[in-house]
Amino acid sequence: MADAMQFDLVSPERRLASVEAKAVQIPGADGDLTAMPDHAPMITTLRPGVLRVEAVSGEVTEYVVTGGFADVSGTATTVLAERALPKGEVTTEIMDGLIAEAREAHAKSTDTEVHGVVDAAAKLLADMEALKGHINA
Image (tube, rainbow, N blue to C red):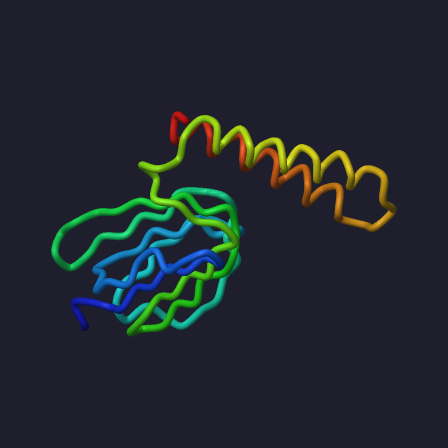
């Protein structure tokens, strides 16, 4: 069994991390999961949440992600996030702005007749509000 895997976290704005990791805790849309070296290959969507990376050095870093995808293989985990910030940089103002965007998307979705859009927007809003409570921003 390998002791490490390559981990990369990228958002449209920047690359946030590229490290050798022992474990990555991922807020998956269908449930949280931990990717470790030799993990079975998979791709999952992300929900808003905290992504936690344990580097080989022992350093633990947390990032707030708003959505995106994670590609897990036995030797690497790559997260392509819609938005991502180091947890320490997330302020109340940032979280309130993200919640306001989700609330606006939910309000707009109620005007459409597309099946599932309202539910998805409501879930996004609920996840954002839960995330704010979780990180105490």
